[in-house]
Structures are given as C-alpha cells and as structure tokens.
Image 1 (cartoon, helix red, strand yellow):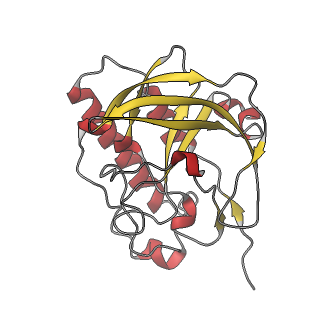
Image 2 (image 1 turned 90 degrees about the horizontal axis):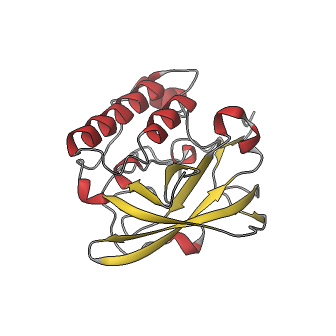
Length: 214
C-alpha cells in the first residue's frame, strides 16, 4: 500500500524554528554568538533526524543516518538586509513537488548585498499556518541558487523568517535547510517561485542529502 503524501509544514520542527527566529534579528550580534547559534541550530536538526517521531527520514535511512551535511560556517553569508513590507498582499497558489497548491501571501521582500551585488528575495506567509499560535509571526524564504542539483537539493532550500519589528534585519544563509521532500517522497513541499532564484552559488547552509528522494 502506498503511504499518503504529507504536507510539509515549515519549518521542520517548532523547536528549531524558535531557536532560529530568536537570533534572526540581532543585527549587532557578535561573530562568536552567530557561530554558536548556527552550531546549536545544526545540533538540534541532528537530534530531530534521529527521533523516529519527528524525523522526515524513511525508516531505512534513519537506521543508517550518520548526520546531515553542511558547508563550513561562513559569516560572509550572514547579511544585513532591508525588509520592505508588501502593501495589500494578494493570495496566490504556490506550486509544490506534488499536485497540492497551498495558498500563500507575498508578505514582503528582503533587499541585501552579497558578494558585491544587490539582490532581492521575496518573503512569504502561509495564512493557514499563521493561525497556529506558535507560528503566528512565522514567514519563510524559499530560494534557489546555482548549487542546486549539484551540491544542494535540486528543488531549492528554505530560510525561516518572522514578521520583523523594523526594516533592519539579518538573513543568515548558514541557517538554510532542505525541505522535507528531499528526504522522503511522503512529503509535499513548496517549490521556490522564479522570483527567488539567485544567480550565484550560495555555498552556505545544508548540503544535498545523499539519499535524496528526488
């Protein structure tokens, strides 16, 4: 019997989201603090992947799981950005890795400089998910870059975000991660819109899982 496809609820766990979001907007954070929090984030991910009740891995993969693969921490990928909120956002259906088309809002944009060039990424909100108290201020940034299909997952990667209190924010690509469908076909995951394709290699964050589902 074919198992049912599960909706991918971002992030992969509430605990990881809270850790990530707690540090997301500390623009004045020291490099040592940033490195420590990135390492804590990765340790929590490793713990989740070994937990049979939380892991997105197939049972056979979890049995032989030796850890996730990451790029070395590189704080040049931790960038200061300007957040621009979208006025009167309109619901749209986001494509996924299955036929499911969940509704999202383009909540805003982050404008930043990386490797000497200016870029913009759109930030999205899932209205249904935001009805849950723990995700009331949760946003996310799905994106693609030129490492996809080689060093990172084909479909793209995600960065957790939250409704900012000011226009000055930090986007840390060291914290980007693979969607759950990269580990199992049981999941249905949003595909990053074309607007969020970065025309460069983002060699930071989580790498491709060798047992990729796609």
